[in-house]
Image (cartoon, rainbow, N blue to C red; front, side, top):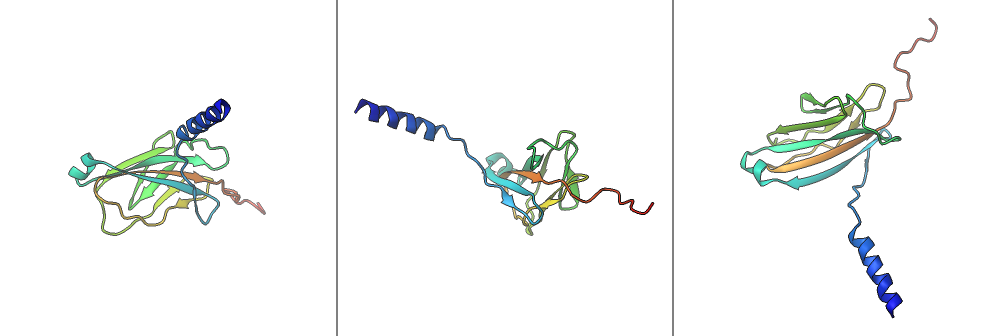
Length: 138
């Protein structure tokens, strides 16, 4: 009986310590993204939304330094491979697109955000198999 209680206690401990794993949403070109929305009363009071995250290599899981994310007509990114923006919610949905030289773009489905949304979108992009410069015959 003591062994059974011990195993139940250990099992409960492992289940309660489990961290949330976000599923990778696949895209048409070997990459994907994770998407998580939180609510912020502070942003809701300002009629704003926050979007941020990182851009990773899908194979190595390392940040891609200098990668950018396009939302609407603007590009966002820093030297480490992270991006963030605060904007107003739009009535039409725009996709977010991650871009990095030598890699395939990853595009989310168009998303309409609500005021107060705080969104984390991490991109996982794959290297493009095509050469950057095509010099055959020269």
